[in-house]
Length: 343
Image 1 (tube, rainbow, N blue to C red):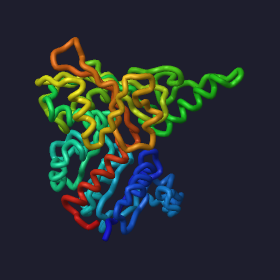
Image 2: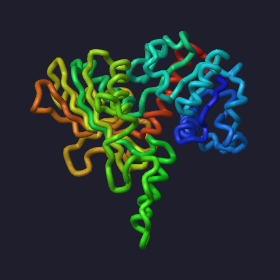
Image 3: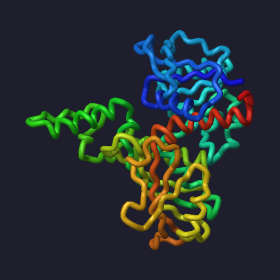
Image 4: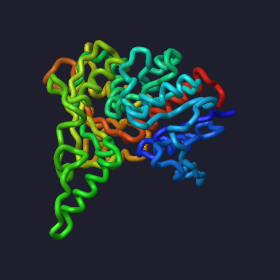
């Protein structure tokens, strides 16, 4: 016996990836609905590589009564309207937007890191999925925190354009093509604040009063909620001309001594982590190599000689998967094991 599952925002990058991963992981489904905005209503979308086509339904008219789980990837605006309706109808919402992440009555869950937090879903019938860059970071940090207690994290991100949706990917493609076309005219930035092709932009989301961006604030606040409120975090978030795959350079300080070798041993056994750390040419993972994979890859683990009990490391993951769709499906799997117990 399986579940009745709704994917809201099914035609977007993350929604499509949710469908792919549900199929790949053979999530127990009795009935599946693909739901999106009115402009997509009536179009068809494939359920992974199963060959089964789903007709897209209109979110404005969809009745969530009788459905078990709704995976939302529709953005904060539609989520604010429809997630409470789904939850009130008895359908458990797993939301990929930022809307509910810092709500004290909504658990923010990364199954490899804080699975017990999911038990709090009953307050609002909603579970939040973290920011993509936060998700992969805490997967890498959790085993190290358990081993030696993290006190401070300094992170610089290198975030792909897919994190900004299809428009971001299209802008990178069009700008890159125009550079190589004879007498091509450079496409003016629309999605991003500056040219993204062959460039990097140290600005993701809106600026806050303290000079940090909202993306940087998310990494701080979400890490504290998921992992440990006592950890100090500072982030610089940068958009780079990569289509899929976020990378992070992490500098981590610990309360207790931990060597690079000890950290490698811990990471090698950690759930969700794949350690690829050969001190040779190509002995590390880059964004191109992580695309389509479930793992959070960690490379370049080394001791930081500038601080006491410090490590530096490199972390890469497919942001459409672990950073969004995969984590949402893993939450659904965890929910099934702990609470729904149908499949």
